[in-house]
Length: 414
Image (cartoon, rainbow, N blue to C red; front, top):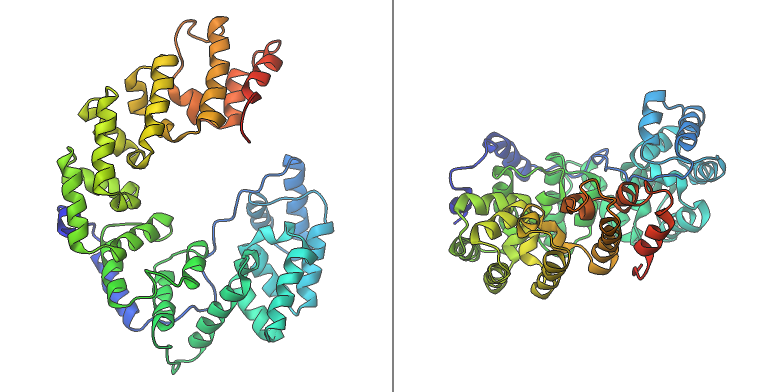
């Protein structure tokens, strides 16, 4: 069945797998550092001023190059030095040296805007109360700074500590059972380039897929061969799907998808976009097709929608009916407009669809749309951010803007 999903489309990743199999047998647990995680996009109201201040602060206080400081300022910025100074002082008071602090801030710059005492100080105290020595504390936090952003910090700390200890000794014997498997498996994933933000949850996972051995190797081989990018969450989801499901079960799912009109290549493309579609039940797949067809969509349109946006096959059928009724019958968008943007069936009626459509109705009634009597594209109304929508349909109408804003916000559920 696996060959059915691939259907002649195995990517040329086999050479990578040969290295991977060697790594599985001789896996060296986590060494000096995890791959850096993609930092959250923290935006300040002070905008450019905050970024400029941040760049100057990082250069002056930590000795960063201007280029590195500018890169970090795109991820986090601040307008005064009080909080970052407190964070740096706290780290130094716990034995972190400047080179370690530089590594920590480079990998986890959000640390500079966290509360030094209530958040960071409390977590460091918890680790010390568990018997962590100063050298252990500084080494482990420097290796994986993002554990300071986790609620269950002790669990992450213990897992990372064991891996670092194992990494220092070639004679270290992996623990038996799931913990030993986890150390080995997470090491292999790191060697494939999986970033820290994906590895951390796997480190403390008590469930599949990283606690197994043979099944893990087999599932990982398939995911690599199928071309999933190990730096993305899709890789982990695909690994979990293939680990949890037998060949027979997956084959049965493929048969269901083909029974409603998808080709084997379609199934492959859908799985590549959204690996979780394999868990959708046979009943749900059939019922979803039945629902969309009953609403007036052709079978070809239904197939196109799922291929464009696979999650739509998992939507509540009642919700799909309700939104279709509103968008097609009350707003008069044609069915093919929804075919091109099936993700609209996942938007909230109360928070997004109704408020925006109410604004649109007013603009239509006053002839203020670019095409006086025509609805704009569904995507330009529903798929943009609130800010984008307001700029496009509210703020440009100066005198009417307060009224439109009131309509937009009225009755919205926060």
